[in-house]
Length: 230
Image 1: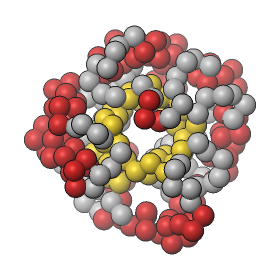
Image 2: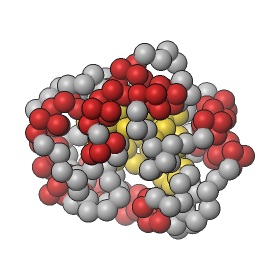
Image 3: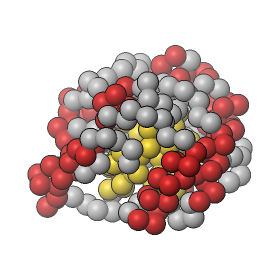
């Protein structure tokens, strides 16, 4: 399935452990895709290991690139975050430039998807890593959404709350100003109810941390998201 039609995706961390039966339940859950991605401890070795295990199933799989060293062939998509509210330019374009110097000649651009990332939770690992020091308010998010769609023509605008459930009013505000760019929401989804609420606002809902805390709750989010027309 084309990522533009994904309504639900699981994000699995290559630095965390999943049993084979747990991974099978995720892959066979009806989710539209599985994203491999993490903030720290991401290596080529653990990315390859997780990819090989997921490839036993028919679910589409994407790599969300956080380090150049972990990039490998074999994914359906490569999601490339550019952190629009980072205070460090390497997270906006620096790492991307380094990657293109090394791999640009061999990239299949149909598989590469640029994500305009806005990190809202300043206490999360991703914020600390990328130098996001201030939480954007609703007006900031609207401006970043417009930047992603109209200035940079990015296909995806990703609101990342990582570890906390987002403010529905802010998610709704972003959705209101986006027409062509796809709104992806991630962060703090711990139940079917949380997933259903965000599915009514965003185009795609990403479920991550709860996989490792309560797999049953994570699996319940698939049907919850699919039950909401958008």
